[in-house]
Image 1 (spheres, rainbow, N blue to C red):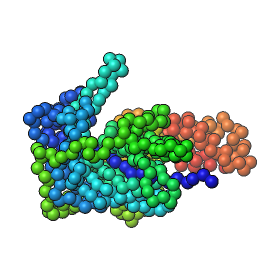
Image 2: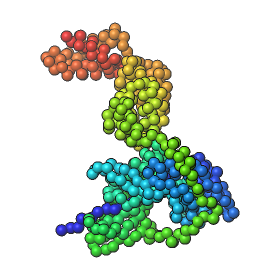
Image 3: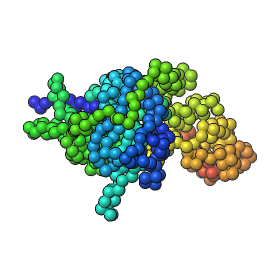
Image 4: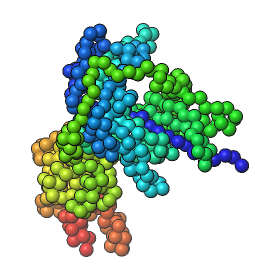
Length: 477
């Protein structure tokens, strides 16, 4: 009988914080920008330059820690992690090894087998490195230091996850929580949230963990799921063939759906950590923790509970809308204007999600205003435009956030509810389609649908469907 294996997974998640300036200097953290323009002597590691800690970084780290049920280390300090690498300007990274800011947390995730707790071992603050840009044409590598010194928190989980599904549920929970705190936009495609996957396999029932590998270069949830399945299969195959898993760092190539070894995994002593002599320890008072606690927002679970009581929309809609803070904000602001939660929810759940999927966008990339969505709903409710035109107008709002009323007026999209003009068109259509009229009169009630369609076509979609139906029924009787 073949052996049964269990996968054991822990994650190290790096999150770029949404501060305006870097962790130890005043340079901008804005994404993009010409190479090496957001730099100064501190973040390029010039001799004699001195770091000064950005207070906002500490506050964001505390806020995330509290949201993830961590204990806050009220005395924490920074350490130097020494390694030579071209994108690491000082030849060390300032991080926290011995006394990280947050420890012993947990989050609850929904899994196929019900709710599950995933432990958070620690959260520490550190600086990001620069970026190597490989120029194939000139066959050389260039260094851009814009990212060096951008503040990060690293969230280290316990090895509590057992499948790709659990990993994705955990990452989604982290991302939603951090976005609600506005501590980061958590865009995987821009690298503001990055996950390294530590994975091992062991026989079901075994006490001891297997040898783990760490996988890097995972920049989407789909890539993470694929990498986990691939690495699990690779390790099982090795063990089944009598080989052994080597502890190493592997790089995932999502195009080839393959991972390859980068280097053997280092231990902490390889980095020769020691307390950073240029930075004083961070002492966090009870009052400071209380202030951060009081500023915590309403998180997804509380928001979902309130929506249930307040808005009477389906649970499924609530779960999708509250999963993104941006979507929840648009929902609440639009409802405050037009007082129609069900309609607002429908526009977000159907047309908005469709366009996001089509354009491969995240809810955070939405640019239309609640005011314009509310106006669209009001115009539809009043019968000023019909539902077909409304969808067309919404596409324009989604793309360019246009002024709805002006657009409808300028393009003559208002519903034609002049009964005389409508009746004239319908009489012509009835005269031109004797077969459909005969079918309807012979009891095939569906035949009226064809005539409604022809009318709408003739009116360029601008007729009031209710009135079209009413006139047609009169004429067909």
